[in-house]
Image 1 (spheres, helix red, strand yellow):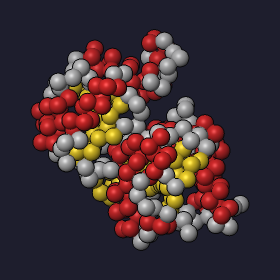
Image 2: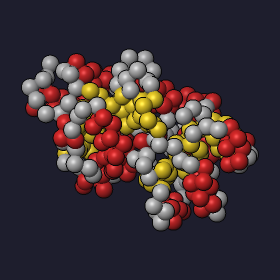
Image 3: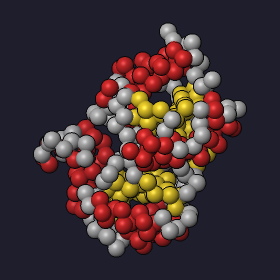
Image 4: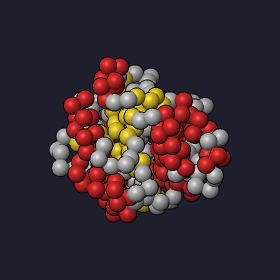
Length: 292
């Protein structure tokens, strides 16, 4: 019997507008009211996740930063798996050879290395991924661009970040040159202390190898007294593969998901635009005799 549901956010729980639809939120709350524990598993940091869940009154656990931080329903930090500064420097020594901006994700602000102009251009390109029908000037007026800019700080190098003393949860790359990102990933994959995966075709997310959604989720649910067969996971992208490919009770890929993720999953649900998470939850509740 499934007692825990763990869901990715972007492309899964959230629609293409990066908000949780009322129908999806209602289904999640139906599961919670039926006694099922709900968890968020996202590449976003905690502030970024909470911005999209604002006003939902959703009470759940959080695995954020692709597994780098775990929080309980009271939002207390339970465990973290940050990248060491030495590991960050190893990654940066590779990345600096390419024309790509690196985002350093922490437990609060995001930090970017470069001039203010270079950083603003990278923010713009990243936001345009979600608003491809808008002009550059229109993208700058979107709430997403404004929020990202507000939580971004510009630094000159990693030494400056080390002096600040914040934990580094993830390094994030965004570029339209997919071949270049593939080449970077291939080089980083040689380092066994690094995990690199994409949540979109045009990005690359780099963490400590211990900070991956699947293993972190397994450790956390077992610490709460659950077993793997009591967990349903939902995801769509390659940074969800670490949990979709594990032997949880039900592994569910979105119809809009990456082909490799869909192949690894036990089940396929509808797209995020068709409220696929809501559909999967309600099918589960019916199967377990818990439907409203």
